[in-house]
Length: 358
Image (tube, rainbow, N blue to C red; front, side, top):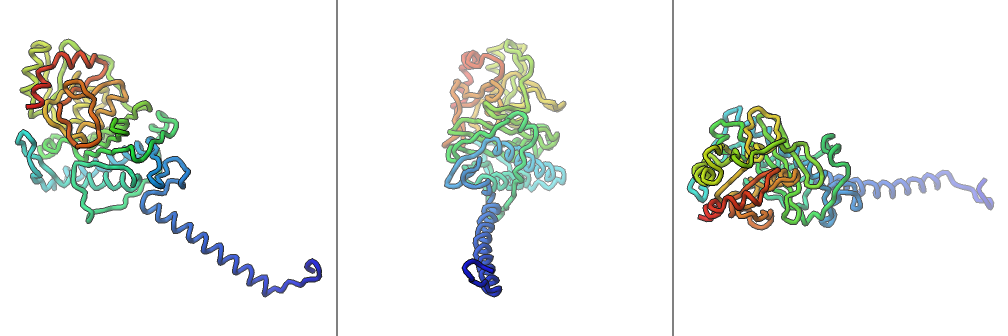
């Protein structure tokens, strides 16, 4: 018996319950639709107040961005390796460098770029991504990240680190050392991702597809690679571009003496790894990396971040820091070192700085 003698009709109760269920259904289905849309766009990051949320620009968790960058470099590397091993490069010229050398592009460049770009863009739709190769809208893919952060990253970087999304620029090199790739000189080939915050390199990933080695680092965070125990500052081994070794050799011998060794090599990523303690028997060892001509920022940003995270330096030949905003090129050449007196090296090599502007 209901209070005050009111009798509850079973039919009325049933109607009331059905109406209530209808309201709940519409509310919940709208919620699910919103969540699904975010998921498809790669923007489901736990709501507007959660770490890494990008609602209205929002913030980006650099630890998550590092995890996706490592995955992107590996996924791109899989395409690079698959194309090379199938010998279906579809090699073509895409232009010439300032020095008149032919710039090549292959299916490895294109397919790696597609995987890397869309994985990063789906996971972080509100950050600026600059990549070496053109991204064709007709080839758009939705490549989802499972939000898994590898254990080695979690061990080194124990807490999230958030920055405004608008301050972030991602630089992708989907296949560094394309010339060497076409010549089947596989040891020089890398895929790279770099993240700059307000123009400063803070995350770097260099992956070697043919040896499955990946180096990564976060400035003021951690890394899975380290510097070597010693470097030769008096008669250094200097690693340089295969196409410009003569210019550097002449100045280096005048500066450091006849015992100086010049190592011609392909790929900026490979050259940076030569300065570090890399467990790869095919990786040459150098003490200084010098480049004397114009170079694109996606070639050098990841290496710059790695060196900076480990206490090293990468500057122009005149010792200026390189900004990773604005134009995609670096005009002043570069000098890279670690555990050495970098400014003393700059002062020793004034003639190279002049060469970079010719």
